[in-house]
Picture 1 (spheres, one colour):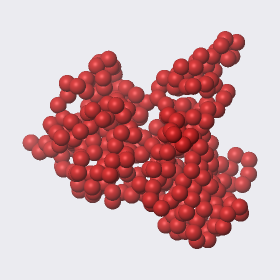
Picture 2 (cartoon, rainbow, N blue to C red):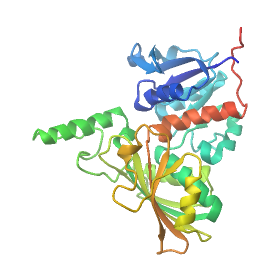
Picture 3 (cartoon, helix red, strand yellow):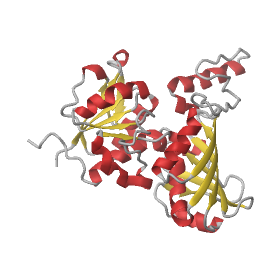
Picture 4 (cartoon, one colour):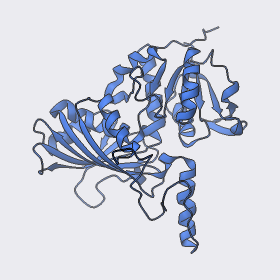
Length: 345
């Protein structure tokens, strides 16, 4: 069997680097993997398994013999390049917000709505959801199937890596400045992030919600069920990697904490760590480098009929981005939707 040719666009970013690691780790059947980025990154080296790849320029690359493009270079780049790449017969799996709300582009979390990938041919583009949505819908899916979700209230505690490499550098340099009795400078964030939390992710919208909060509502409906009501408050916290969420769910049918515990324990992509004792839960620090979405603190919410509350943690660079994109690619192969362009010699 001939392997696939895979290109990673945005190869030098947080998510791009994670994509190479996961492709190697999961033994994705690629004969050739290409690292692409903007001209200023040409020649930068990235590691793929035990190999080193040199970054090439996206604008000079011909996708004619490439099967899958993992796109993680932001919305503006995706808007310009994804349709051109898709037109060359290469399937684009895009990690930006650019295509998520397009009715002709499937928005996919494989544990939740794998069958949606079947529609990728309309534009040859498949969208990856927002990092905070991805882990949430993995947790909501088994509960929704059992008791039908009416409403979700979620507060997020999102790590700085979700805002890119410069954001991680800013947390580091501000922390160092504070310890050296210097004045920390805010550039990437609107306020100081070190030893602080910022209730503002993405831009503000007319109604006072931020775009990140709107994304969670809109994407959850598209992936899981258009009838679900969801309200979010998204907060940036001084954590390097790993997003956490405090989730409150109201169901149409009764469901106990014990039932939820069993359902989640048996659901794909989830690990339940929920002992009612000191340290019997997962924090973002422990989720780093792990594929699972962790669920802790499952309890009944008596303030509404049929309510549950739980804590949900995941590595945002993995399930929230790189891992989910590669799982989508695996989905295409498992469902026999994509044959390699290059025939075996």
